Image (cartoon, rainbow, N blue to C red; front, side, top):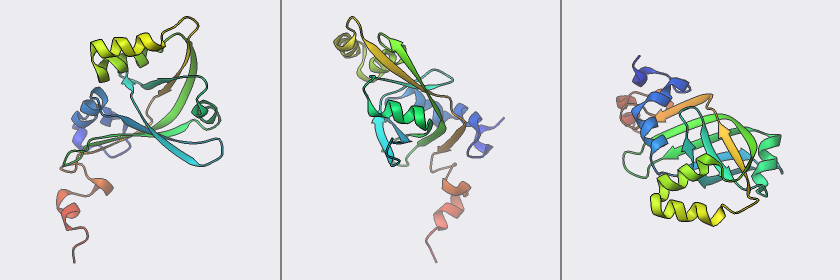
Length: 167
């Protein structure tokens, strides 16, 4: 199977080199959801990829928890600021689970993003007796990859993409 020929939306695109780089890198993800008042929200976050789920940890008093229980459909973007940009687009339903102590993937994300020493300090700051956290996990049901070289918006070929906006 050549992942470069898969259509946008195919979950097998998770095996694409760009997807793997972004899932294992330190770019922040942006997760979009519908808030309790019905308006859209998006926020940047650290995350951990388990091989099957995109996971973030948060704290129980967060307003997004009730909103995700009510409307679990989310969209996630992980992208680079370099040129040409690389983008991984995910869609799925958020599964929200209460956890006693530190969400394991939350700790893993802190170690990956901040390094072993700072990651350990970050976790030690929150890992206190009685700590409760919330694990938000998304198993992608739709995946898109854009590298602006071989995979372009709208499924255009590189030549078609280059001609856009020209008479």
